[in-house]
Length: 360
Length: 240
Image 1 (tube, rainbow over the protein chains, first blue to last red):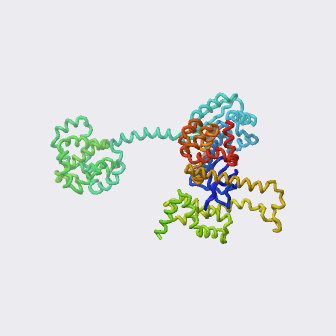
Image 2 (cartoon, chains in turn purple, red):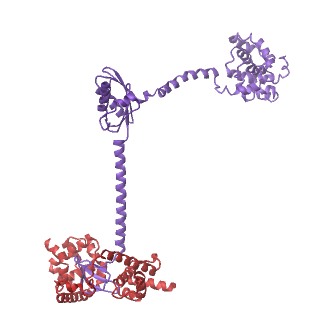
Image 3 (cartoon, helix red, strand yellow):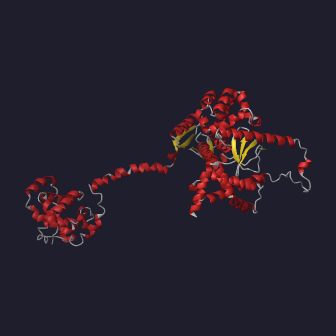
């Protein structure tokens, strides 16, 4: 571009270019009217801003193209190179085909010697799954691993249920001369298969437990405490329980009797502590469990403290306590009633502390 | 110190709009400019050195681009000068392998004497004188319109689209001598007619009024050399 020097000032010259644009430039010893070709033109802030914008634009463009390349690469990888599905052809040889999203075979793997022998000269990479499966079965036939009419198991695993269905259909319909059993790959793992069964089984097993325990599954804990508790009075207390047994059989009849027997409690009141002791003697620590709270010890350790607590409930269920006592001897399973009974009995026994000596 | 700094800044701000004040400021600070140049070229600069001219120009650029937010003016100007000299050095570096016409390899003969000169120096000189005369006339005429060359340079369109709009208006004026006559007679740019006739935004023309004054004047009779220089622009109008 040629410039005519229009004006020369102290620090700069005004030039006019061929496009009739007037610019300021360094005055490199120019003379007015001179034609110059390569002046040092003034850069305004705008020009600099443009340059910076241009640079930023370039950087942004490079960054954007990098992002595009990376994302395109990752998409290509996930579609073409990443295994999405696995098909296991299980005969005498277990041959595993890894498939990409498009259903093309990525890898053919085999750990056993028979399979390695079959795949020795075979390369099915990039081929369709069904094609490879047919070719492998052909090879197995040739090697005598299987014969026509044999059954071969196919285990299919896929990230996508639609792919699973597709492969399943392909395998079921696309393999002639061979009986094909298609299963999900999970079914190949017996351990995992067993798990759900185990879960199912234990349920019924567990059910009876709660039934036995009644409402207190925590039963196992207390035995420890109970063992301590029975230590002092336990053995002698058992004996008096024996006479209590006879009344037990008439359980059903007892209720009415209970109502009638209000006087009985005083005589039996000493027994509750014995009951608590029983488990210690025998084998069942369960009955005392409900008493964990502190009830069993009350009679022995805090005979005074127990009565005030028991006072409130003691009023009505005294008769029931008699029945419960019987039950304990016969079938000591029902805990709750025992709890109540013990509490009540304790409550009653507390005031009736004097009869304690009865055991001997 | 503070009063000096304030004085410089006020002078710089005055020089931004007044070319005479800018010239005066450059003259006053010539020792500073020379010292900055000397620091770069590692010798005292001669008056004919391109580096000194570029340093003076960089000082002028610094005046135009300075704002109070940028700190001390002299530091800013020194940085600006240095950057400009570095740019020039890099540019010259590209031409380093080339041989100067002024000096031959044996330093005895001028290379220009050995090259057949197709240009007639006498003719060139005459042409330059004629151009100089035209420019002087144009400057005088522009003063009647209250416009200087520096104003025109500041007001010249920078964006391509704006430049084309202005050129379109000029071409329209050139194809309608009445408009040019009106322009010379009234000493006012007929913006409405130009905008309407050339089908360009009037606002665009208004923003570049001083530039249009200069170019319209060149399009009138008497400035043939300059018209020849910008013939591309004018030809473009004839084609369309």
